[in-house]
Image (cartoon, rainbow, N blue to C red; front, side, top):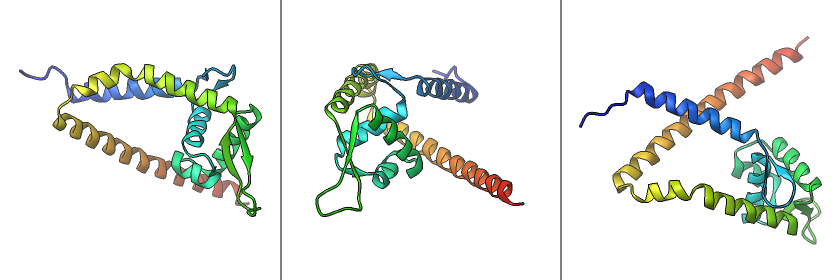
Length: 168
């Protein structure tokens, strides 16, 4: 049987998916605490939930964003009463993060949301052969590599533009 789809159809589908992901990322959602949380906030909260005692540097590495961005997000979710900062006795330098009871509620609400949201795709993935799974994994790795290089290029251009703006 011949494939009715052209490769260009695949790229159009990918663009539609990316646009929908971007749109979804910009809309906050309540995960059971009464606080609408943006994707960046809930994902930060979830990493803290899975790694209590994490610091800003390690959190930024785990999420793949700058320390400055994580600091801003952490401040926002701390103001919402979802996390707290603390220091271990005898270590006055390192600030660590952990969930508050309200933060744990949002974390569990997000886990439940993901469980329901991804139930359908999980069922579909269970029907994949090992070869199909390997192919998808390789395709996702290629997409991630392409996105990493695109981000590096754009960040390099942004740094260059910022440098030129500061030059008198």
